[in-house]
Length: 161
Image (cartoon, rainbow, N blue to C red; front, side, top):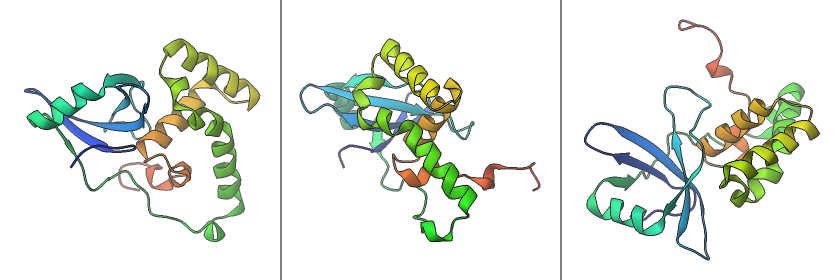
């Protein structure tokens, strides 16, 4: 199986195994935008970085990477009619704050452009810059759907709650 837009890859070397998401493939060049997903922290990824299609193809061919068929981060579809007004308002606010950034993933490639774009978005939405980063990480990790921005109350509370 080959990778495509939004694929989740399991990569490994001699020491460790990690997951990478492919949020964007440049149709005009040989570049692929990748994100390493942090499993220990729920709403975190590393910064986006570019790989070449050839390097990713070689890794898949050698067996150093494989495409996961079942994505553990995809959330089930939720009917908005069953959400409380508070949850709907938060969901819409979160989506509104990042939709312009995720519309063009090329903005995320260069770290200077990324920081400028995120800072501008944070100012426009009266949010902290790290809140925008957290929402982007949640969006990318969750499979680039609006559903992944829903409040996740399973992550609240202590170990036994």
